[in-house]
Length: 315
Image (cartoon, rainbow, N blue to C red; front, side, top):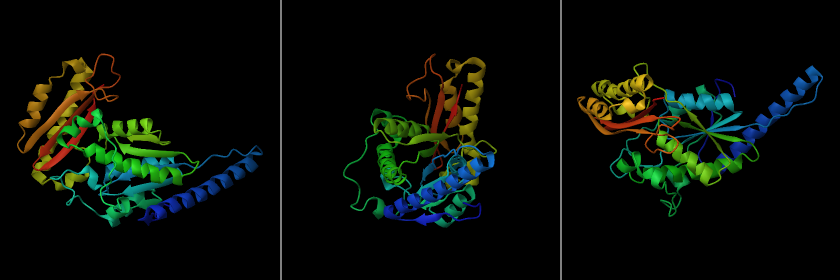
């Protein structure tokens, strides 16, 4: 796909499956032609390679962080699919489902610039034709801590829709490898999706992508647009506190971090209310130990009425 080409936008599952099959067939033919030409030029055997599919599930309102995910998928795969679906199952009754930004035309341009071939933009009725599904995936014990405490049922909704999307995309790709891209900003979600892939034997490879930040350190989020100028300035205490914790950890070890002081620093900022700030081993979201290969600082806080999350590696 050329840089200026707009992605093909499909809205039904049937259309998506057909679009994926067609795009992969075309990509495979291009790869085969290239392999034959290279073999003829080098007077050697033809080295065929199977086309791969990159898949990026999103809720839209695409920003530079999403663009990084999409570009990574484009760099590493021959066909890229992005889904844009604001999933009602992962929103609580008092959350921002109705006001969550929806801008398909703008999102399509971001996707085009990042090299996306297909956008799947289904309606709620397309995804849940009989209303809310009677059967859902449980996120279990792992989904009932941190984000799961403040947002009960959130991860059940996330895993239910991701499982459904995987079951739509994976068969359509046939024998071709499928790579799924998720942002590391939602660290707990990344681990839960990885466990679901493993436990449910999805033939999909998860490719986490590092957090993208503005120049002043604020983690990019679709919810940032809800912040006033003053609230955005106040929100910087989140990433700055994480950065100080990382510096202390690198200099003196994560055991030396004074969590209570770090929490107080966030809570004492006008307009900011801390939900949680904790240290975890990102492989299991248990408290870190001396044997932990990585230690992650997790934070969630309300800035005005907007809830933001962030995290940072400390080792």
